[in-house]
Length: 441
Image (tube, rainbow, N blue to C red; front, side, top):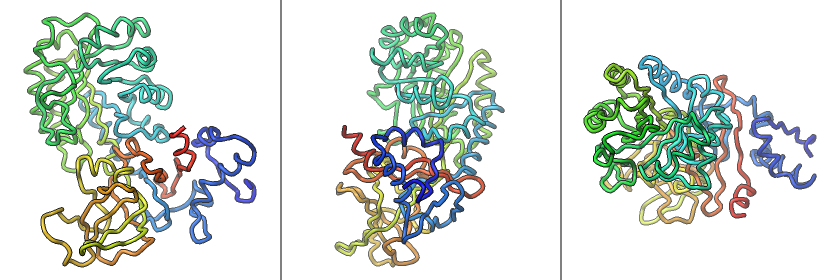
């Protein structure tokens, strides 16, 4: 079977395929199946998946749901992030909570040197797949994971003084050179959505200034502060003033400070020069402190799409819904959680509930393919009547998507691919029934 279909298996996914091997028949079937599924109309999409040219405007060659990361756009973001880090003399590291496609880490390694983790699994990924110890923070560590977390980490930040008291001795025993930090809460944040506001009243995150002792324990060497969510440099400027006002008393006892994530420096309207100036001025005031930023979205901002296909069009009470073969709740969860309405290529986003759009031409809701009643968003206006089988391209779908997707309803997970700078598409991962079955094992 393998010879007949001339299947090409790359080293990048060989380990995943091996995990499914049971016997000779199943081995051949499971190796072939992901590629056979890409046949459409009797023609394969990827005869050699490493060398197929793709139209990145329409993705007309694609007939299955797929996330596509564009290498050129990723490198552009990485170049800007490296420029900020070098110019401001700070360290900027990747937050796995937003993006963790480890097969692309060789690209990241050309520009950055560390990552940040929020769990044992993320710490293991950073240590083994990125190849460096991680900067690790968790709201609460546990006895059964702590030792392994420390072994994978260069920095371990505690959320509370009680967690520090519980684990700091163990951490030093396991890794004498590990840097121990404490998360602080400046009680100031401009994040407007409570779901993403880490400093909202009653938050479980961090220690306030009035909870700190006059002098820190000797083995606490850093502060960690996370107050932002896709924020601008002006927000960081105001937040920084609160941090220094409340916590600079302890700065002389520290060797590093981590200003967390949410610094959306790759957004087009972001004031990069202001960010650099703020960081440079801070370092002039506190030259002994190593400064760390750990954005997530900034790395993957506007670097790729989710390509889906229309599978049906239904109408109820004058509202037309195009049902697609992806799901907001499964594959774009932030759209419902935030909520926000994503951009669809070559469609006009209409403000929800602002007016009745039923009289306009070619206006559609987009419905997901799960049984959740609320798995839809809208409205969008197109320049033509949508047809079953045509592609819809959801823009900016590489951050906080693949790290949060789920298999509710057993819905098939979109494939993941990399559009390389030479215009060829490299498949990184395809999902099958076994991925769903093994989650239920």
